[in-house]
Length: 188
Image (tube, rainbow, N blue to C red; front, top):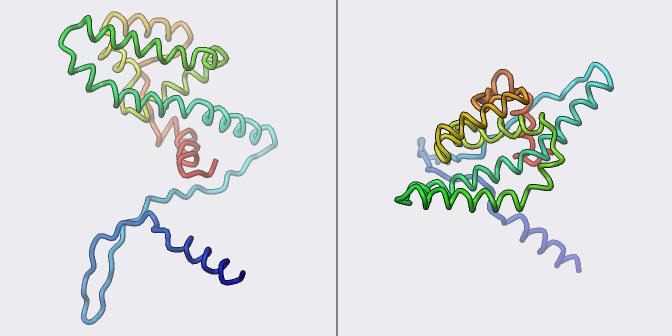
């Protein structure tokens, strides 16, 4: 029985890690192997002045965990449909593709999005910008045209939002970036 436990443990330990072996360098009679490993982010432990700050942070983390998967899905859909969109010849075919995509997204997320707050929408815009490296305004402009982009910008302005706002991980969105990195690394 002990033999099988040891054998099972050894089998697990033989799984290849995420490192990529690049090359070895011979120095004298020694060989030094160079390895590329995944980037590791280390964040200092958060200190809170009081319980209220800690609760606000926890709520913010929960909100990011709710919104981030939708932003990732938006990135994947953009990567999937953008080449198809530009491969189509006529505006009619392009509009039809966008209508079908819009219908598919609404069918999937309509009930969920109804429950979101304005701040959830703002966070989604920032995360879409982070994932796609494009503002929501430029995406709408590319796929739906100038008039539509200006219309949705006007609607966003009514709710004190801006589709042209970028994502600044070093400044304004530093905490959001930290939380997203922790989600990506499996910490949250």
